[in-house]
Image (cartoon, rainbow, N blue to C red; front, side, top):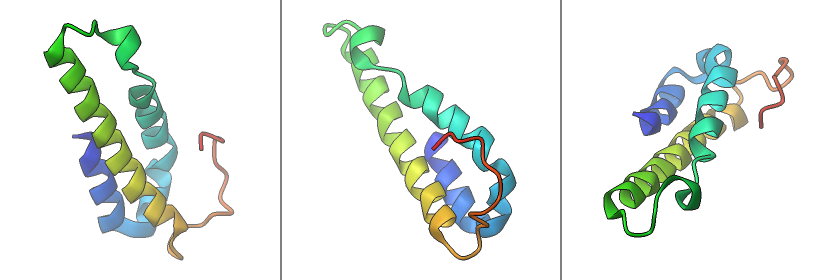
Length: 83
């Protein structure tokens, strides 16, 4: 689900700006999950899930930052300083 946020951002372009800050908060929270603190090395299912979560977060970051770098996104607009 997280990775589709990047696809949505790419699809709606500059209209994604109003959703940027809340999405960044959600992605940052998901990215802060570390394998060492969330799972024992013997719990292969949890480690696999956390690796998939990390991959989805990076895919979402990629899409949202591509939109932010585009001309459609007003970089002068106020931001919460999340990035």
